Image (cartoon, rainbow, N blue to C red; front, side):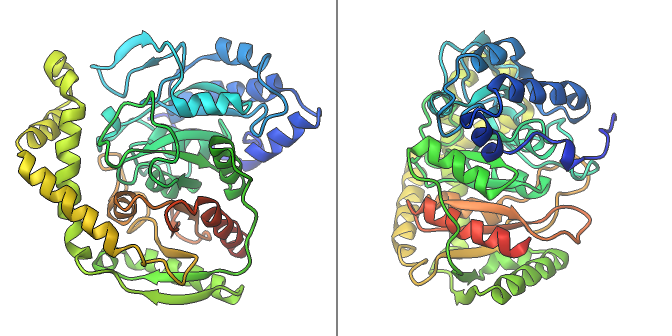
Amino acid sequence: MTRPAPFDRADAAPGVVEIRDAVRAGRARPQAAVEACLARIAARDVAVRAFVEVGAEAALAAAGTAPTDGPLAGVPFAVKDVLDVAGLPTRMGSRAGDPRPAARDAGCVGLARLAGAIPLGKTVTAEFAGTQPTPVLNPRATSRTPGGSSSGSAAAVADGMVPLALGTQTGGSVLRPAAFCGIVGFKPSFGLYPVAGMKPAAHSFDTVGILTRSVADAAAAHAALVSDAEAEAAGAPTLGLFASHLQETVEPETQAAFDAALSRLSAAGARIVPVAPPPGFDRITEHRATINAYERARDLAGEWRAARDRLSDETLAVCERGFAIPAADYLAAREAVDAFRERCAGLLSGVDALATPTAPGPAPEGHAWAGDPRLQELWTLLHLPSLSLPMPAGAPAPLGLQLIGPRYRDRALLSTALWAEAALA
């Protein structure tokens, strides 16, 4: 396997805010930012394999007409290949994907363009945003998985090919790759970003997310996508230490890093308080699995009917399980989840955010498994905003700190994350 040269942060693409501010001030042209990113992709992606398609000519043309006064002026970005980009095919990581160019942008891509950003290409995804491994290399730990299913988006940002990428999360497909690749991943409240032009995986959970190398860059992208003011660092927050049965899955090395991070946050002024899981927390994973399988099968019904011979064995197995679930079981699971969300309504009362490790451990060795989603997926099920930021170095591979906020308090969560990032620096 070809390995990339060691990652050099100084050689990486500048961040979202740095590019945006330079373009808006007239110190840089969008074309220069695009050309620099395209050059790094050409030099690095033969080894990293983050992109499935690069639209260099279209990106350079778009850079010449992109707004230079917008909140993402001149910012090149990458797009997970389950989201449409006009002029590029959306193959969804599958031989059953459509090879024809998309006629128009997905809603989130269109919003980014309106803000002045320029899409460079499509990044590798697991088939239909599922759990299968991909050929993408983890730039920060080349012997380990980059996570999934937004593996290409995370690797492209982590390697400095682009300052911003869009991914999607149905379970943990933005936050886990972010943690494994040592970058920031942000999943907004369910329904806050448009999903028009996205291939559904499980429509009750599907959420578009953001991958960047800093919280400030994520805050800038989020503000542009929702037409909100950019988050600013808050004062020292109150963080809820959330301990559940899932804590048993956390590896000792990760627990030690998490405890050390909390100690640093506490020393910087954060108040750490225990938060107990609500009744039924230990059973909700079963209901989530029922909903996920039922909806994945039905969201893939067109491919199941017309292109079954081009689906992977893993996707075929998911569909078979999902089609075997009766409506009564699905509806019972939906009702149980609705009731659970109501019981969780006060979970964050008295705290600014909950804190957990993003994943039980660092990225698994090899590329056969994309990692354990359980520490991320329950917050996706609850429709709450969540964010992963890197914990201080010390482990053999990156580890993530996960912060979870109240629904629709996305800007407040980003403010807390800005404070935490600075305190951990």
